[in-house]
Length: 523
Ligand SMILES: Nc1ncnc2c1ncn2[C@@H]1O[C@H](COP(=O)(O)OP(=O)(O)OP(=O)(O)O)[C@@H](O)[C@H]1O
Image 1 (tube, rainbow, N blue to C red):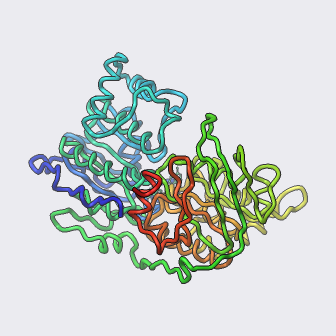
Image 2: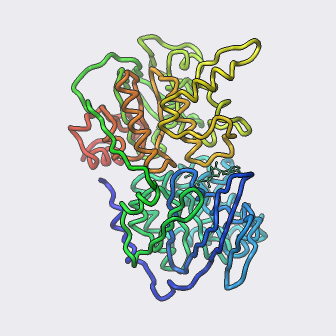
Image 3: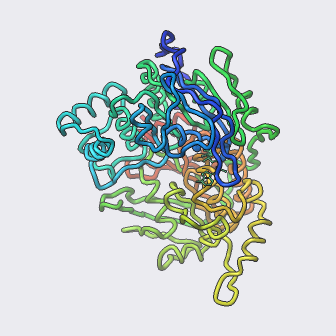
């Protein structure tokens, strides 16, 4: 691998002298949504100068618990203690005033404004006012101290996801009195190199006495940095351990998964030296970004029937724009794109009719219609609609969904659940089921395992392999090199406005692909 998160050992910056002091403690915390008990009798502590990781499968109740601690939800029962006293943290302004900060999965930023203005706005809405010069100095000071490089004058739209996250962290650290910081799956938007820097930053925060709550699906990160771990299953804490007791990855996985077992991913014909028929091709394609800048220039891309082509690249190297071109959401400014040898006229509809399915990189923002159920989402680029009178034959859609092996394998929630009330991972399962049910001829899929628990990640990886074995041409964008090597028949790399490759996974390795991601060609 080109990075090694184990380098960022817990011992590095750990201050033991302060570690037994509780900053926050909960007793019997319970939250219900209607008849659904989402958190039950949760007892949890956050110590000063300590990292407490929260593990659990999708829908286990992790985000809901964190939202109670950040004051988004009031608990239905139980108590939260700070400084030895019971406190009420709802709404979030109260939690902030008590020193609790949260870095969300979906960033709360205004793209048209600069970094400085976004931070000034957040501070003033909390009643904290700083002069601009003073604020700029503070941003630069915090950035330097914790290795969170952000340019105060950059516009948020110019920032990639890693930079936006750093801005969110700076914002939380600038709020006077912050002492507990909740991170909700922070590394799901980071590339491997950024993960290492992020864990180093956590070590510095711990050294400075902050109490950290870290939600993650990544066992390696827990092993690399956590002092305490709590595992949630169906809303209850079923396992806790501390570093002193010893942390064991297999035990943590078993505690998360319960009776289920983690199946290995099998790919029979990986990297076969075959030349399947071409189904999609870009020749000498140039793609512009939203602001007219050249994102990719003169690229060649060939997708073949029954093959998975993996796309590696540092985030912001043109992944989004390329994926959009391949689904008719954006057009080449020069060059040719053909599906089955024909150029497609028109936008997305033509691509869908040609058998292309698309899973975007941000399904929560781009694919969910608030108020629509899972069933209703299925007919949007999903199950073919069968008209019934002037409407849709919903019974037909329901029986297709309920009979679908893909939805069953992904343990999709009930068809009548509202999509905006699902957990993040369950939204991802819905979007993936929708793409797979169509059995597309071509699947353009971005970051399929983002936000998914470890068992579901393996399931979706296996499903992509099966889909390809049945003939689908898959273009897989991923920041996880292990995933790309495990699944791909060919690999391409986006770097320096170019698309490089294809390379055969058996003839290269992660460090070579990593170098190409950073520098283009090998030194
Ligand atoms: N506003 C809401 N209304 C109704 N049900 C909700 C609401 N928010 C969450 N839920 C349900 O509560 C359960 C727990 O969701 P939560 O988001 O806390 O899970 P999670 O462990 O964070 O999952 P993930 O890893 O997928 O993010 C899920 O079944 C979810 O559908």
